[in-house]
Picture 1 (cartoon, helix red, strand yellow):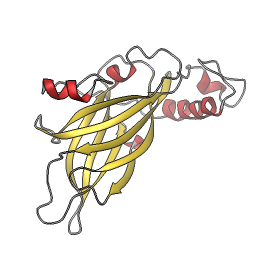
Picture 2: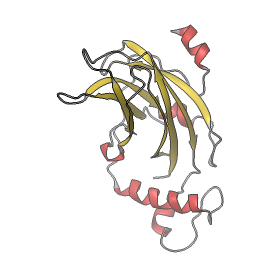
Picture 3: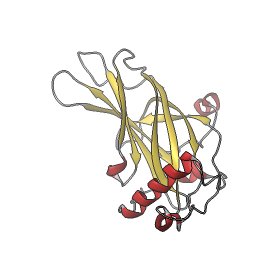
Length: 203
């Protein structure tokens, strides 16, 4: 299966739901391809921001090259707690069809977007997540079998370090269980790259 790397920077969140009754919230984020828990990556906890955390940290997630279907990247926001287990604050689903729309086969420039944060399993909105993202070039299917041999056949410069990284990612992705697509979300999700101000006017 052809794939590419999504470089997702979790910038900040604002006006999150208060879930700690006593202590100040210390929020971190976990991002992964929905249906593939092995792709989970966590960014460090913001111990100072409370309901308005700032991270400016980047994760790299291997995603299918095609945006067909209803797959998504899920960002789960959680807070650490001194007593008891960590608690969910909210979630954001980034639909892959929107992320990949019009991207072509080559690497893309970074773009900014913001999304409403929802309660886990609910359509209720509590805050906004600010992100930026860009895509690596598409790795062709035959790259998986040729990764150890001849130069890869793909968009972009096959001799660059990024292409070698994508080759390894393609091999790992092909060996993994195909991700399960999420059902359509019960709430509208703003297109990637939509300005925050215009999004808020639609809520």
